[in-house]
Image 1 (tube, rainbow, N blue to C red):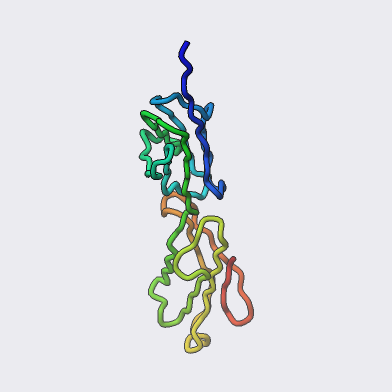
Image 2 (image 1 turned 135 degrees about the vertical axis):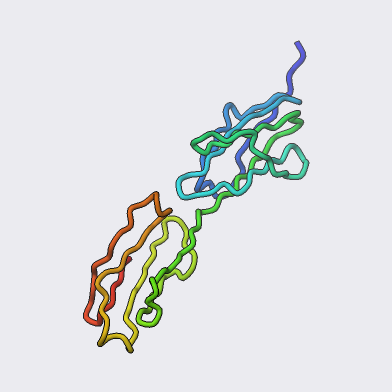
Length: 169
């Protein structure tokens, strides 16, 4: 019987944090089709998947389908050499929005970081009365919301210190 040429499939990504890859048996026959899956971990987004076949250039591979749970299925056809797969993921990023409900004249609000935050990172915000408003106004509460308006219950912060400011981390 003629000997069948087989090629090896390897995940060559340097930092394997942030995703799961399903390589199956990690072998593919000459001119065969190889299927594998990639799923970003919680708090990560899949940015691109590249495959290098043999001595060729690495090219971006488009998912054949993506399951409801985020698992993307990829297919390489007519494989003619060893396959090296590289996965690029990024931590999810979120925009920080401060809404002072018409309190600009009396309230200073700051956040750290200021405008965008990565998933898993701590957000610190401070609400403080402007010097011109300290005798006429007080901060009774600060509320915050994480996620979409209908997806997450807003929280309320009731920590006050002596100079009438609220802070939450």
